[in-house]
Picture 1: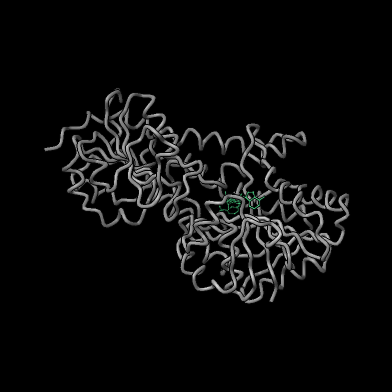
Picture 2: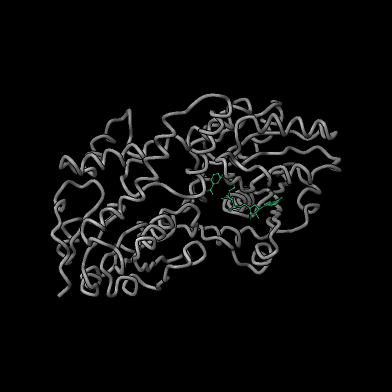
Length: 437
Ligand SMILES: NC(=O)c1ccc[n+]([C@@H]2O[C@H](COP(=O)([O-])OP(=O)(O)OC[C@H]3O[C@@H](n4cnc5c(N)ncnc54)[C@H](O)[C@@H]3O)[C@@H](O)[C@H]2O)c1
């Protein structure tokens, strides 16, 4: 069993640490934020990720947390880089935290393998390798091992991945990282470092492309009277295409897709190549987040003074992550139009990113007296809501389903004027929304 140091106690670092401990390795997770490490020492997990709290508790013997870089690297055989790589204002990936980790290694005397899990531009491995060499750290190996887990399902994804990608400069380093995953059944793809880096960016770009594609199909469905839910099902049944990431909605968000698509587009641009397809994917996604505002205006006219409830705030269900959540753009557009915005989410706190939003404890509290409700995030909790009671509590029972979560007929039976995304033109010529009761 190996000794592993992990840099970053975020969504990826904590899941990676807990899962490697579950596989039997000794793991030290290091972060630079004292509050984060303090919470972990107190037995609290600072992020919401299903199953993670239990996994950390179960493996407490082999898992420790520290602020001290020396503790993380002291006896480590592997050092995993799981720090954030957020976008810079230019849309490139900000590698400041990655370079801080590299800067913290000098003085390291024993052989160790640095494993990059953070999503980085292609070419980063070459640069880190050169920096290690120039600092006299030739005995530090370097491997790219991109992460593909999805927030909300990350523990399961780590233990049951579709593939493990290992890109190495040195075959023995790649072999060692591959062996670390013993106990996980998955195809291992061995590549050079640049190709491993590209697999990650290309995967996220392709998933985002599918989402923007089906969103454009949904928008055309609205114009021609087709139902995108049936269309997507029909398309997805083609084994060459498959059903995944063909759910129309109000666009993708989160800490990965928007920044990784932008980073790949900029990476190509920096080399003189205009990645037109990704430019369109990004633009479609931006416009998609705003369609709900146009739909609301079609029903309500001016939104000045309108009360709008956002149901679900996190960028997707089963996470508390608000990074690039479509709810943020939606709330700020609504507020700019003069609307009063309330929001409900079972775990995410929207107040930091949307200071003008009133956060409510229940969907009923959010919709009470509202002129419209919008399903922004398809939390499973919403399935068991008492929708007739919600409709009755609203000033006007208008429900825009940004995720095509509800059955349209049931929603209408519950008393709503209901519209989904791309579901034909049934409500295309609204006559205004009657007051409830
Ligand atoms: N979130 C995901 O589901 C996901 C999935 C695949 C890949 N990724 C990629 O993995 C990387 C990490 O993402 P995340 O969502 O876990 O980020 P995060 O922001 O949740 O966590 C990053 C952590 O690194 C810490 N950190 C910063 N500098 C440090 C240093 N020098 N030493 C130790 N810790 C340090 C931060 O304090 C923070 O706690 C990103 O590159 C991201 O694109 C994320």
